[in-house]
Every structure is written in structure tokens, then in C-alpha cells.
Length: 316
Image 1 (cartoon, helix red, strand yellow):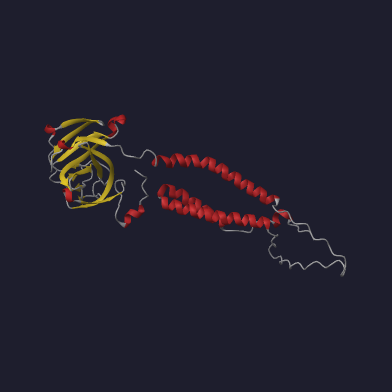
Image 2 (cartoon, one colour):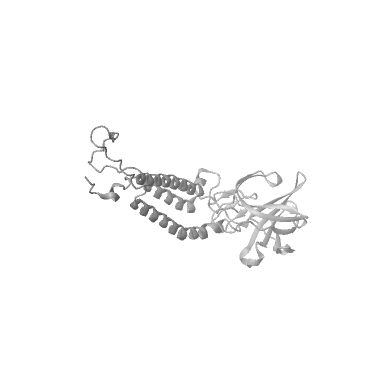
């Protein structure tokens, strides 16, 4: 008797949770692109695994025998055909069923076309949203002039243009102290003036000798050098953050020490490189032990369980 459900209904794949898992993986992937790269990797892995299992079930349902409907008993195993010389005339073997039913072909074509269209629409948008965080992130080298302009043991407020082509918007300030020699190499403390609370500019907690200001011309443009005496360390005038002379937090809302600049000595000149974050500094001057981390944004913890709650920083 012909099955009233028709060919298409008999070959429908059984209910499955794989599409739900695939959707959850896609959601985790998209959220991870904003929150954290490890979360994005986990989402991608979930989507790949459940997508593979989903596709396997769909293909298996198209190739396999028809499944019995609800309440319908399973078909008994087919007995071997009776030879022609025994009993009644043997029936010819049935022709093999269609390998890829039309419904499965249309379903897979629709899913494939939808995936291609979705990729064409989403990949460029994701690329424009994500790629800028990884492009042109290197820090320029800032020549502050000869190291002889930095008296040993004294802080100097150095003001410079990080990128002269961008104009005043790229002006930065660093607090530089010549610590003398360490193992035959000049040692400097190069502290950023960006507060570790919300990024406000910190100020020396002591007199700044503007009358002794000097301007040095370097390959990066003009650099202003002003001697300072931060006897009380550094103070943020915005929200009351306070730091000692090594940049350690001593009071107020900041969650860590002040960021620092990497530096090198080239042809007798002090050259600033990129910045990095500091949890704390043990000791002082040339003997200081700096607990350094990758550069992070203001207000972010870097050395406690709270740091796990913040997204992974893009390369700098």
C-alpha cells in the first residue's frame, strides 16, 4: 500500500538539537568579538561542532531508509528472495531508491545560498569593525634629545608631539628622571601622565620651574623640558588620585600604578617607545623592580581576579 505521507515527508530528518547548539555557538562568537577573543574562539568551536553534527544528520536522513511515523510499527527485516525454481515465481528486486531526494537537495541548496549571502553581508561589516584594532597599532619613536639635558636624580616634565602630522591633538607629557648608570647602561624612569583611574592628566605634587624651561629640536619636532620637584609624588586634580615618585598609587580611586614608557638610548639621545601598564613598583630609581603588564585602559585591573572581567586588549 502506498504511503499517504508522500516521499518528501517520509524523508524529513528527525528532530534534532544540533541547530540550537549551532545558533548558540554563533551567538557566543559574535559576543566574543566584542568581549573577549577566548570567548569568540569557544563560540567558533561550538558552532563548528554543532554545525558538523547538524549537516551529518541532514545528509544521513537523505541517504538512509524512510523512518516510520508516530505509532507506525517498524518494518520487519526483509527475508532473502525465494529462488525462481522454488515456490511461486520470484519477484524482481526493487530498484534502488533515489540517493538525494528532491526535498533534501532543495533544503541544502537553500541553506548553502543563505550562508553565502549571510557571509557576503556580515564579513565586510565584521572586518571593518574588528580590523582597525589590529592595524597601525605600533607606537612611534619619540626623540627627546640628548641625555645630558636630563640632570641625574631630577625629574623633568617633557612635552612633545606623538605624531607631528596630527598636530596638537597628539601632544603628550611624560615625567622623566635620570637615575644614573645601572650595569654600565643609563637608567631612566619614564612615567606617563595619564591617570590610571579615568585617564585625566596627573600633575607633579611639587613646584615646576617654568623659568628654566628649554626647548629642544629633534627629528620629531620641538620638545619642551621643564625641571620639576614632585616631592609629594603625582596628583590627579580631577578625582583625587595620588601616586608616589615611582608612580605607585597611594590614595584615591586609581586601581594601579601609573603607566610607563619603554625607552632606549640611541646616539646619546633618549628615545621613548610604546607604553605599558604597571601594577606596582618595588624599590626606586635604577634599582626599582617594575611589575609590568601589557598596556590596558584606565580603570582596568591587571593583577587580580578582577582583571579576568575585562576584554583582551588589542595589540599595541
